[in-house]
Length: 353
Ligand SMILES: [Zn+2]
Image (cartoon, rainbow, N blue to C red; front, top):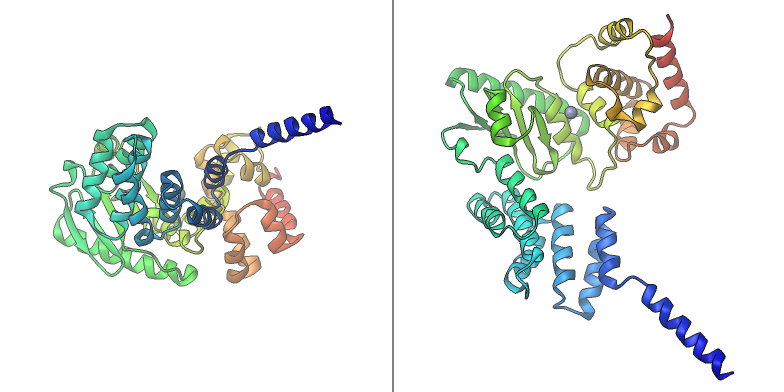
């Protein structure tokens, strides 16, 4: 009997040890991207241990990612000031503070803490995070002589454009914004910072990335002056349909192509590509899953055609319901069996020789 009891106790002790700690659980939850749940759980744990700096940091980061910048700031500041080991915790708190201050237009503070994070150089991930933000937010001295124009929905930053052209560029983007947002009807947390580059080579040197791109979460666009009016803007506008959107490239890029306001003949582009690449066939579900494996010259127009077809068939409301979780499984839930018919018809249209 005594032996049995000892065995039982040993087993319980082992089970307890195998159980991840609260911190590990919270960290995992945060990494899984479930922000609301992370915030609730961190609040709950902090009631028991109000000074636990790990919980405080995760709460600050999750609130930032959830778009609650003013609520996040005190937790991040607390971490910066109280990290007992002056460790990676402080580095991440500085980086995230930089994001929060940027979103509430406290640019001097944002620039300073991002710089502090980079100089602190505690972990390469946090340093990269801060460096990327610093560059994308336009804090590099390279941007010092750029011209700025502010309109209802944008802050334009021009590398080189004369006043008249800049004005008409700004007007045309403002028009495009209104047209696109008639469809999505979202509210952005701030004006879009729209960086208009004259030179792709300069952008690559400063940003360490190819133009153009949007960072929708921060309402930022970096674009070459000749790029389409609507594509990157659509990424930003559509990002605020819900707090947490499950994105897939086929749908997200397809939507941006669909609203790029460029009047391209997408069908002709796809057909031409298929003529050139005789052994290839259009397989929409494969594209949905393995987007990266397709060359952009075919994946983008094809995605645009597909999204156009979805909107035309199911209408705006259903499409927007689907948009917040862009996986095939969710399409099936929202659109029913008909989604497969649409896919089949489109594939037949292009694959028939
Ligand atoms: Zn895009």
